[in-house]
Image 1: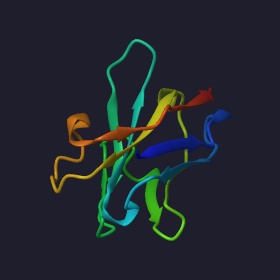
Image 2 (image 1 turned 180 degrees about the vertical axis):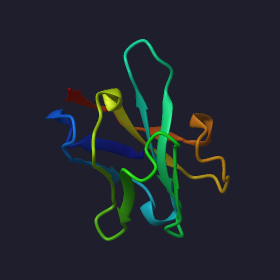
Image 3 (image 1 turned 90 degrees about the vertical axis):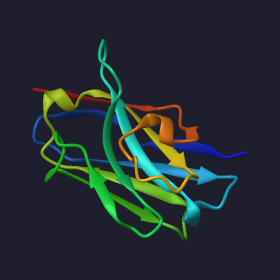
Length: 124
């Protein structure tokens, strides 16, 4: 059974940086595409970033140039480095794993397993 555990969330000020981690267990991590999504209170889930098995990366428009996704296959972990944080980045952040070979990285339905989420709060 594949399990994903996020960590690294917290309360920061606007302009600060934060790095989220997502540790994956129970599967062949190197074969997964990994994504980060977020959901703010009262809003729909939003695609943040993804990295495929070939280390190609994809970003949502609202985070391009500020966030960086990376993966460490030796540690079965995916990271989300978030710089220049804004109040509108406040949300619960979820990591997700995709075992399909689809390129629909921004679609939640493309992912098979999800973590429990970690809260990121950015004060202005």
